[in-house]
Length: 617
Image 1: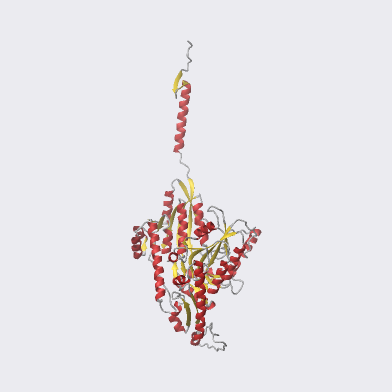
Image 2 (image 1 turned 120 degrees about the vertical axis):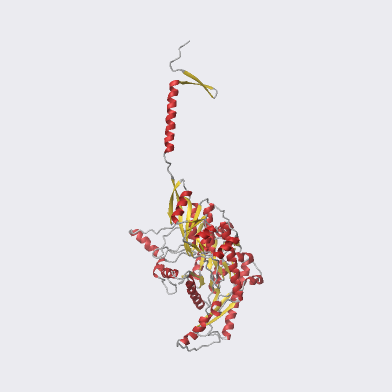
């Protein structure tokens, strides 16, 4: 038998198989294992390197006008609604963004825009991202936006101004009587009350009934929105409103907010929520920056931008959906900036855009986004006719307001979408003039008149209507009303008598209009675009280019004023005036806007105009 070597062989049976291991090899293996354990322990004791995550920070403020806006070169930076929605949607899709902080800071918007913002916030949360709201002074509109977020924070010194809704209408008849001004106003439809502030000292019964019903609907929407978002009983929400204004501590106690905290404490909460990472706050997330290039080439590009000269690009052959924006009080001619906020919708401007779309064979569908209280009956009809000539699917998306003339231009659509809070309808006609001859007499001005023809003075501003002139003017308004209601009935597929029961100048919320058949569906602009794409035969995931018209005004005119005497005021002048008006009470601004309405009566003799404006406090 042979001697075994010094290194004793061990027989190890593993998994049924014999394995021979030398003793010295075993010792080496054990030392290696111990070294491995020590290395693992040392590695475990090392602090782990945290990843960096981004939280987007956005300010929700301003009026968010509809449509394309001029670039912020040397004037106020006005962000459009579509731009803000795009920034929120970018945060929803951005993989680098884990959450969003919204500083809701006094937006001056209507109920439709409020709903658009809430829906966009909902899309961020649907992407499994947290959204925290920061409120410093929570008005009704601010708070309803904030309730779309996961959590609401307010500093200890803040006040939640949740006090309900209030409608105020100012009447000027007594002032006109004292000044010697005669308001000669005619209308068709007992609810067509646009001229009442000039002819009465208080609301007519019909006007009051209409306002009561709209306020009831808005109030119900507000309570339902808050109750659902905050998981509260509607009666508890109503009780909180009746107890308002509320301190931050009282709002917390009632479950209206989640935490009384300052901004640094909010950030501490965000960091605690992301304990596995280092938080980077992306301020002004998604906001485009103006690239100031002072090289010769850069200066040339800036000058081209100022003059509205865009670099020539080959027209894309990709299929498109055109989005046309109809914003402001309707007038003949070109669109203009309004002196006291907002703008006018000129028929020439929109018709040019419609014809551009009609001639573009790559456009497969059209969406008309309306935010207009109406205005000139003639201009409304001209735009309606051009829209009737579209041969592709044509849908309407109603914004804050699409009433009277704003409803007129929607009538030919294949389908009408409204927001729950949209003000719409107001199918009626009003016309007249302000005769200031009495005022002239009071200040010593006299007028001599020579005329031919029984109705020659129908548009004179020195005297009221004669019986013949009044009869002729009323006949004109009646004719326009018959045209309006006939086209509305045809567009809605109703009998004329049925449509007239809904007309008479009566205003509805979008929610009410859906029930009576004046609109087809409740939804946002994004919902409308998705629906018209489907109607045009596209799949939901198909890449379809959006063609947005009309384009923003020439930046050079925005800086230095209009190039012709009829173009209105410059955007710079308007921005400067808005800054002044923001220092005044909102009620003062509304009184100034009333003078714009008087000016409209002076320029457009027959109006399809909504009788009032609503501002969500």
